Image (cartoon, rainbow, N blue to C red):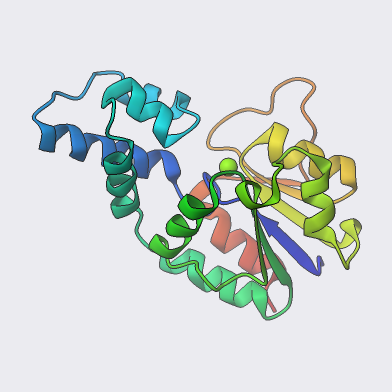
Length: 202
Ligand SMILES: [Mg+2]
């Protein structure tokens, strides 16, 4: 059993793409623009909200951010999972992004205050997959007694495997590519609370 569980945020605890798609649709409708047919693909490809804003609503990055945040709703099963896990494990959030935006997402999702430690690349000055992120996340403990949960093979799973931690990959229907690191376990986004609670809550 791990004594420490390190969570990614976007795509792991929050369905960022769904919220960004909904926010983009609402903003486009409010502005009287028709949503492009391939909006979902453009949302998935956009590395940041600002990049999507440049693509579909230039100059309106702040409004798009607000619309995305409004579309993030707390999930009772995720909140219950974190509370249950925290009784027996140290919980660390390790996320890439601007600190202010990531903290606003945490509050929107009702996840603020549910972690023992919050590590954000925008505050650290480096981000996943930099091994220093994981050294910080595992500090004071042993990587072998940690579980890293994330949806990104290169940024979450590979560096965690290399550090000797166990891993849970949120596959989102994707097959494991040839040559990719083998996660300890794999699950779909909606299943995560049930599976982790069964395995790691007291
Ligand atoms: Mg992610």
